[in-house]
Length: 137
Length: 177
Image (cartoon, rainbow over all chains, first blue to last red):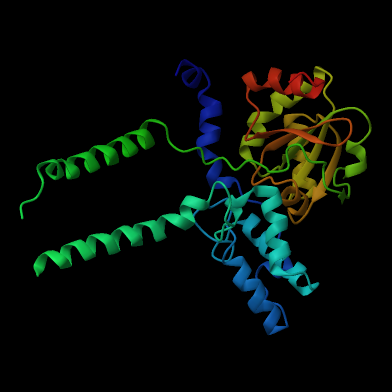
């Protein structure tokens, strides 16, 4: 606390940062421009919708106006246009940011509860339902 | 058929469980920092052109010279980068070689920024489309990476380097970790 009081200027700077902290350089060409080839654009769009915006963490890069999201959209479109597969682009990003970057996480030691919990809950539901229907008779 | 007595306690137990989960979330919020998965990996190949007059651009080869470097991902439009500048200058005087990756910056803005806040950089590369930033697994500015002499990333510092981070970063550069 004393540190904060002692450095009000630094604190003010930090509080003020979101207001200014945006680049003024123009967006990448493919950030807001679709690919000419509709099949490639569809593939790129599908991938962008499952990639997390790293600045605005609840959104996908398809939804976000953050400059980094724009640059990532451009990256996805450029690589799709070059003929790279969506899976390979996803793997490249996962190698940099971990599974966190994808909204479609692969089954792994960490993510298995995510995949198996719905099945387990459904199983419990079926058991409970069977019990309660039996009682009626 | 009556409900078994112990089952009366089930809702309370569930509530207590939920209470504990929420309390933990309140007392110790989840860490939302995105860490790079590139730590322990070699720096990916890249070559960035120069943006500051008289100062060379930055490429991956400049990070494989046998001596460790601190790679600072920054921008003139980033306010925490101003807060961080004095700490970088201090690291510079401690003998840490510092290389800059300027994200989405303009030459004039960057020059003014360096004039005002000090210039600790040996090289500054112009990362026009955040491409190198993304290839390093960095999700914002400022971020800093300690890269050893062989070009392997050994440490990532997310956010501005504060006064009390300086010693740990200098130690990481010296390889004492």
